[in-house]
Image (cartoon, rainbow, N blue to C red; front, side, top):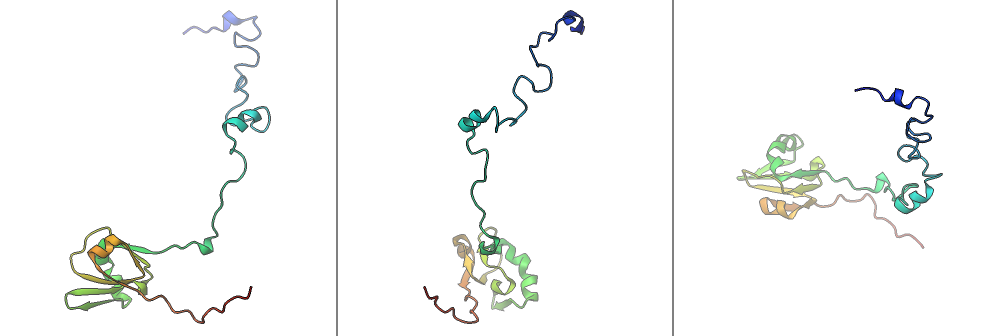
Length: 150
């Protein structure tokens, strides 16, 4: 393809207008350039939340991160339960105390081949349909909290 450079020799802008053809010249910069300067009004109209901080993060110390286990994983988790002394048998039924191994919640995904009786703090409704769930006792506190004076 022939070059058009010879055609535009002697013309200052080569048909592009002033400052065109030099990077992002005619569009006022690339991307978000100038939002605090010459594109400020546009930012106020189209993206008023662009600058600043929004929302908040809860302190990690108060966010509960429960450990959960699915019903379908009970069979594979049995060796871990046995090693921790949290698995026993009551006839044909397996009795598992998940609170001893640090599991807080039992979820209902998966299938079980044998009957299970599970001791756990929380269980979903779907998990309760598949296995027998016994609520675990909450860990006793060292000392009862005294009421605060206001």
